[in-house]
Length: 389
Image (cartoon, rainbow, N blue to C red; front, side, top):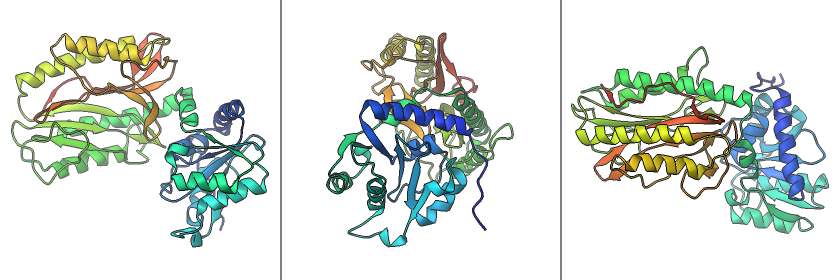
């Protein structure tokens, strides 16, 4: 029995719109064939979310073909046929003999495809910064007649401005994020194991909200006393104590799209220092959202946040946010002073206000928002409180 097509996340017209924007950029860069290898960009252009990026694979976008061609490990090709909007004939599975082969790999199949299709007459675009140097050299030597063009983040920048359909998907992810954080407020308490609380929160993120289940589990960070100055560690084998502080970062996921959310909780009454820090961070958050208007810059948003926070006697060393969408972080625009990226409607950012001040002091709060003419519009609805549990 042939693998059936799954329900498509977006209509075909949405994917063709995205591909059209990519081809315009290819023409500008004089690229005839673009090999997209980063998983998030493959998701954006095809709907594929299967976790096969640990081996060579690539979505080949050409100027002459309406649909791209996906080349992947043969065992992963049924997932591509099922999830991608493209015709099954546009999915090529390469043999297992190329796995753990010291001489040949899946990139050789991609190069063979480009050569056989005659797509090597001009430029071949690669996401070079995300590829091994040996792979880039392989393209240069085997497709010697073509100019290898660095197209790192070319697709990612196009992803930066979301369509209304993408915004709707992020709203679905946001509702799940809200549910996860509210569940955290219910299950965190003195004597509860961090692992048990985490299991309940993650289960909520999978069950979803409003009849829409989570379709993946994103990064989940739970940092409790005495580890609140850390930012990227998991739960431990310990239990929450009376007086513990808990910093949470989580996100619901809908078909690759995320909507991160951070909140700080206190088992019992929080310290005066953390309460003052919370008040300063909320003031900065509101100032940043007010500044995140169409036509402003990422730097303007950061300056607004930093100025408000300093009025409360605190500073934040790290950037205050970044572009967000598929698979969380988009490695393009940063909400930091000096980033001159101009804000456009429906750009989306994680206003990430985690502040790790010293080895024994850390605090988190965040909002994911979209840019509008009136300022940043948050997706999530959890109150901006320092929760006492």
